[in-house]
Image (cartoon, rainbow, N blue to C red; front, side, top):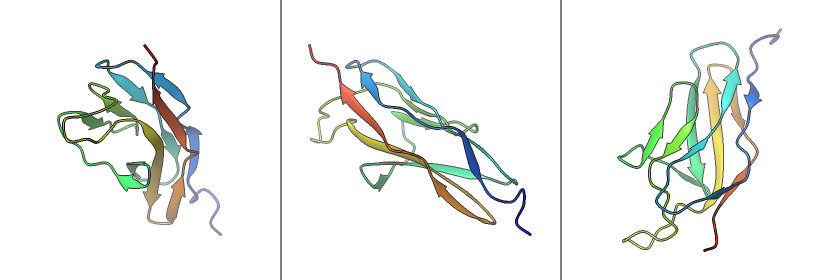
Length: 103
């Protein structure tokens, strides 16, 4: 009955060591019946697109300038997960740990 309707990940994000002030790409690709929307969470909080976070139509997330500690005290470090949703349901990717490279 639901054959072909369920969502499945063809690519999930993986743990990564990030370099300070460098761009970082996390990948997430899903297949299922469109329309499919994808969102990202960092440590449980939804990420909002801004000048530092760009979400691509294919599901990938670009962090423009990785920062271990930002001016507001937050960090790009954390556990990232991709959320994909269509009319039939929602799936969560594995968590990918993003850590700053030690100097």
